[in-house]
Image 1 (cartoon, helix red, strand yellow):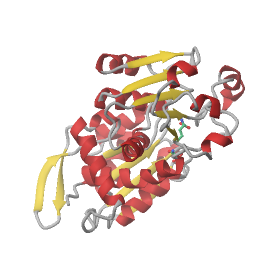
Image 2 (cartoon, helix red, strand yellow; image 1 turned 30 degrees about the horizontal axis):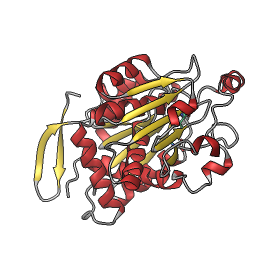
Image 3 (cartoon, protein in one colour; image 1 turned 90 degrees about the vertical axis):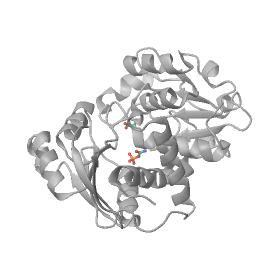
Image 4 (cartoon, protein in one colour; image 1 turned 180 degrees about the horizontal axis):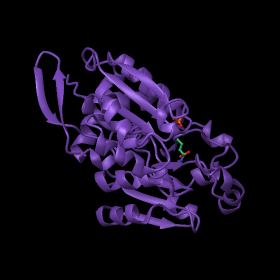
Length: 318
Ligand code: CP
Ligand code: NVA
């Protein structure tokens, strides 16, 4: 976005630079993602100096529920020397109809960055357009770019690199599938999706990814998973789709990651799920609790990856 903000680097005075948002993975360049993952790995290893966001505050707007996103951002800001303010849409004036563009400009006078979780991706774009501080997408109906950063970190932790790895997506072509497509397009790994008819990912995002890397889509789970290094799934009905639960149960019948499906993947394959999970629907208890599951490392990595993202966007430098 175009606004210029003053960022204060510890010991380096005040400098002017363009503010940067993180609404989708592509908002970081390929090297930006690599840098964030590198900082995240250092943070996790306790090898990153000082309190890079000392004196800074993150406003966190939530119009949907959250466990991981809320806690990891709040704890992350604290660990970086800053502070986070939880803003439930039930309590702030946004929930009573105050325009997003006003909320954006008011919050920009109080805090140094905004993280928002909401329904419509356009609302996040508008917030970013009117805010003069960095805006981070903490999940929309369209995308969940913070989650995919931690997923990439988890893949890298297990395989050393993403290069040459094949990622399989089983289930809904939802915000997570769209985010994996964006990540594949940016980083160039192979992505195979297995989605039921009518539940494919966003067409524009899919087509852009196919122009950038090897992406396939099928209704055949086995075809998608055979030989894959990462097997990834998510709930059949996302937040906001509660009225569709029954129809989705029918449509997704059989789209379950079970031990038999996992046995088709590479011998060293890992299982990922952004959580919360519905055992017995998109994944069996045996797989999510089994030796190939990395779901709790993946959840932990939200903290490290987002701290690195905050450092990248809000001006801290080691
Ligand atoms: N994976 C994820 O975003 O979890 P929460 O909904 O708990 O934040
Ligand atoms: N697709 C899920 C992800 C939750 C983290 C949802 O949007 O509800």
